[in-house]
Image (cartoon, rainbow, N blue to C red):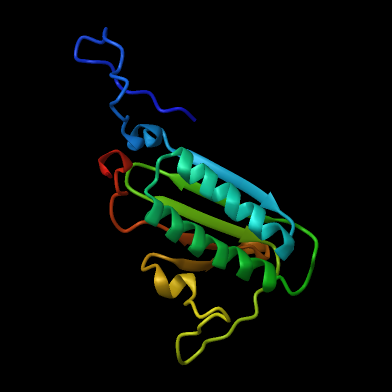
Length: 164
């Protein structure tokens, strides 16, 4: 989605060609990405690429985009790997960007193997789970066997137009 620079005070001059527009302009009404995928790990790489491309289009800072893609990929992988009762149905991913946060919600219809570890679990690749690395992450059991993982930025997003 192209981002337009605001007009000058009188609203008549075209934007200066070297002035980068604020990426937050795209978030004014909220930008939403929705992806529906079968619960198969073969689809995860394409979804990661799609998320990164979408965040780049919104001019989200590279480090922030990397964190969002990493946490979302881990949560999607969990939704796929822990979908024990069925290989049918879909895993739904919704990412909403606002001026102050990016919220990721993942919903699937599989049953979850409940466990309460005494120590934080580390994934096979040596990273912590999203609920450990993102202070605002939470896993919410939903009715009808759906579950959601939501993550949100704790602070305003970095402005890409201020980066050098």
